[in-house]
Image (cartoon, rainbow, N blue to C red; front, side, top):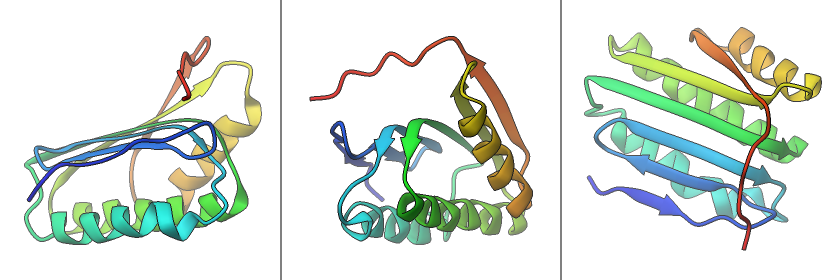
Length: 131
């Protein structure tokens, strides 16, 4: 299985899916067509679920995402939940800026919707470079 990297922009997230168990989603997610961005991610996760790493570490560092992205993020979290239910170790960290109550609540909402422990990590400020 190969590593999948999706280079983001100011409207779409940077995504790194590494078969050694490191998963990162960061930036902003408000693309015009979320299906184009997230379909390869969901397909990769479906393949990964068949033979996951002993430990999967997920870091989500989104400073903003729209409703359409929220639905696909939920689908991603459901796949992680299924990997956990199969007996694998999953660690999820949800990063949010300390003054962004809405994004903190979104992370808590995802944690409530799936059977995963989501560590909420407050940071002073995200420092992303969008090209």
